[in-house]
Amino acid sequence: MINTPPRPKKRPKVYRWATVNPSQDDEAIVAELVRRDDNKPKTPLSGQLRVVLKFYVKPPKATPKWKIPYMDKEYIRPNKSPDLDNFTKLALDALNGILWEDDRYIVEIHASKFYTSKNPRTEIILDQLPDFSSKKEVEKAIDDYKNSIKIDEFFEIEE
Image 1: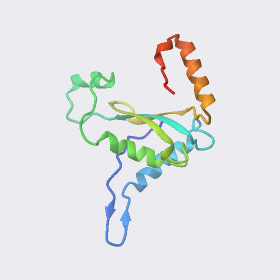
Image 2 (image 1 turned 90 degrees about the vertical axis):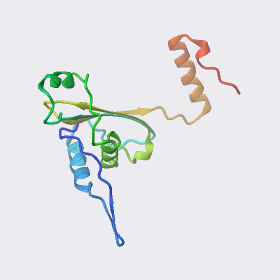
Image 3 (image 1 turned 45 degrees about the horizontal axis):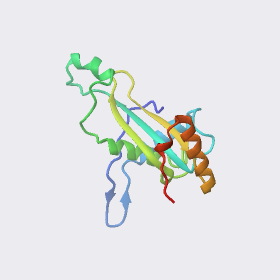
Image 4 (image 1 turned 90 degrees about the horizontal axis):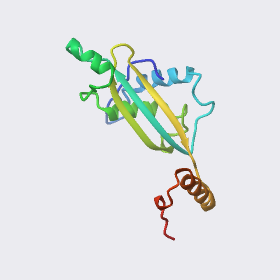
């Protein structure tokens, strides 16, 4: 968990002589908070990774009081700026080399925005998916899965 209000990634400024990343300070803050977290992996992960990102933002100041409890219970969700993809981009870029070696290893992302009146934050769930190196390993995983759900028709693989 990153206990700071979520920050969106800002657009880079492109000049004739250089490109400037205006989100560099925000990325450094997020990276430092995650480095201090005891729940992070000891070394950055690689392979196939699944990331779940939940961004909790404060409701707008003009929000009617009757809406706040519904927002806290996640019935009313943010559909205003900043965009969800900008929150996601900043988190993924900031955590390169900390949670994962590179964000190219991420094969699945689930991202959501929520309101919270008490604790704006970002929650991250990171799973390392199986990385099969042989056809035999894949077939064994399929067989194990078929046996666990008892449905033979679920996987029909043509050769």
